Image (cartoon, rainbow, N blue to C red; front, side, top):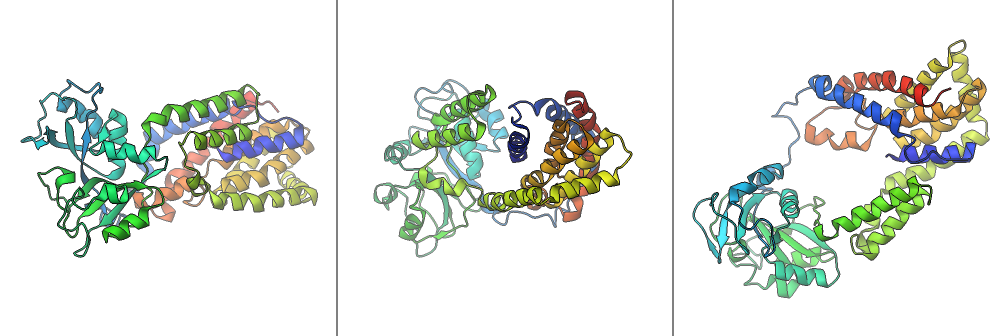
Length: 441
């Protein structure tokens, strides 16, 4: 589930001779997660301060992030015969607005909500790049220039989306994508145009670009700068836009599922299985080899590279034993379950200010040492460290998910404890009895 689980499983193998099995974490983790979800859904959300809309961090490009684009109904699509309004529910879920319909190259009047779809009809939509891709993948629609897109795919290169701004001196200013030969000259496809919310009646590929327009382009991976320079446009900062390859979704799911199943049955070590999944994704073209390094979390790799030797140094130098003895002295006379609770609270507190993986590397050996001094089973202590290390809710730096929502949610550093503190107390209160039930001392 999380890196700390894998780390703790490996530490158990080094110390006790065998790792945790795939679903050993499930009983405690699953029931604790359910309790947390119930709390957040019923009480927790009320504790979150409502950000001031005037001060909340907003996307400075929000006004210009919606593009007018066209998606084509394929010849073999199950959507043929359905009314346009039948797609509204999926469109709403994807945050897409269906503006109209193009048939036989002509834009029909109005929204055409009651019109039944036919093969090669083009839906005119307004959406962000992310929503556009989600809607296209959900309904298995084609882009308007599907033939050109297929030629790009046939070349075996990855595809990327970029956003560029048209200037007065741009090659495409006052011209259409077809007129400048965008596809045959630079192997790029125009997906959409953003004109500050202003509508236009013509098809996207037949619409002359104007200075100030933002163009959403599909280009071969690695040629982003070349295409932008050739057009004479200004590049927007990358937002990590991706292209969903719906034809390979089941390949990816199948490989990942096979790896998890093989590891669950003990046929192969989980890290090896996941490594083979990466190799398989490269060989099948799901993950272009040039993007492998971009997807590696290098800060985590560096952190692990520095913390693993630290954890080993603590253990070999007697530091782990010293810390464990200190905690036991502080808890002298308390029952084992109380000591288990304290190691969980200490681990959770460390995880709030330190990366959860690094916390697991440091806390797991201490838990084993404390169990040994108490003459108790070390598994409950390792399980407590696993749960606590991944429950960092008090600060935005405790977990990268906390950091990701800081800006979009308009939160401040001190807002996290309002729901995080009672949630951490709940996790301890629920998980300790569960650990004692499923992993007796």
